[in-house]
Image (cartoon, rainbow, N blue to C red):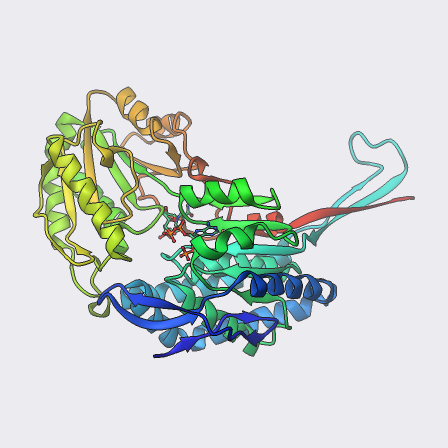
Length: 472
Ligand SMILES: NC(=O)C1=CN([C@@H]2O[C@H](COP(=O)(O)OP(=O)(O)OC[C@H]3O[C@@H](n4cnc5c(N)ncnc54)[C@H](OP(=O)(O)O)[C@@H]3O)[C@@H](O)[C@H]2O)C=CC1
Ligand SMILES: O=C(O)[C@H](O)COP(=O)(O)O
């Protein structure tokens, strides 16, 4: 059995405790990763704290050079990393590769955004300043960060926290999702190969429910960046020693269809948005809200598109792949059954084999069914029928989540006006919900999170101002 070690202070940890990583496609043990205890976790924070002094003082050009080397090594090893994603999180091989390539681009963009950031300056000609002074405000690193990432984008959502943070001079204790730990460890091994000094990036593994509290309660923490579920986010908020938090949580992104223009294209866009990686994306379209008349027209088109989806193994590059674990598949099945009990009509066949759930399109979903409100993180798309455009906005806003919404309409002016009525971080007009392009700010409101991710925003959230003012 292959074993992967947590890394603290650039050293492999072997405390004799191991955690099994299950391949979601086979439900068999695939490998083992270290299962750390509080002793090692405290050690990781100590290392990050002492490395901070040296790393933050290092010339930024040197930090940039190491980041570029890291990117090159990630891309050079993309095939191996993709194979790990296939086995560890059942991501299709092609999606795994594109996640890794996107991550390389993310690092490039991080460097260029950082280079383009201007020093904030004021002088006596500035409005409101009467004294004869010159003031400059630098961005300096906050210190020791905790990065906690989810299973669904284990490469991209880890690097998007770590790369801007280390470029600006911070150090990290990085906790990848258990399913996602192997690739997390490999990323840090590659960082070491790229020249990262000891203690700058420490990867700690173990079940979140066992080690999470000890991580977030540690007193060395200056800031936390977390992506994951609302429940875990709430716990971290309650326990964390630092209240400097950026949270990206769940979503219940709606596709609102205002009129019957271009429905064939809309159907294909919605299905791509809802079902890629079996719907295991925070930005997946998780409900369609429209009128009866439009629903009558679009539901057969959606059905046709859903029936084209390939279902199978990640090694076969299927779009619909086994869900991350049996518990997640059970939950999706429960949501389907509950919707049917509430008179929803399944337009596609309902089928399951272990963690693999065939894509399900549910029409006439009642508002009292769970799937109208809860996040399945699986391949189900509910169609909710309402009477008017006002009803569409009302139902969309009744969700506890507020990540993204998409409005499809030939009337872009109306869509633009409605965008301001929707309680979400981002509205897409005539394009499916999605995080990219990565240079854009990415944020959720309500239960979908707080703080903003994105390249520039992560540079900002991992740094603070330091002002220097002198008399002229
Ligand atoms: N808005 C956004 O940007 C995104 C949101 N998400 C959301 O993430 C969820 C799916 O990801 P999933 O990985 O299942 O989410 P989880 O919330 O289960 O886990 C996220 C991370 O938190 C860790 N964790 C678990 N318990 C604790 C704890 N008590 N203290 C500290 N850390 C803990 C997990 O470790 P372990 O795996 O060991 O339990 C994992 O690393 C969905 O709700 C999805 O919407 C996902 C991607 C993007
Ligand atoms: O974790 C997620 O679900 C991602 O942040 C979504 O990214 P995508 O919209 O680019 O797939």
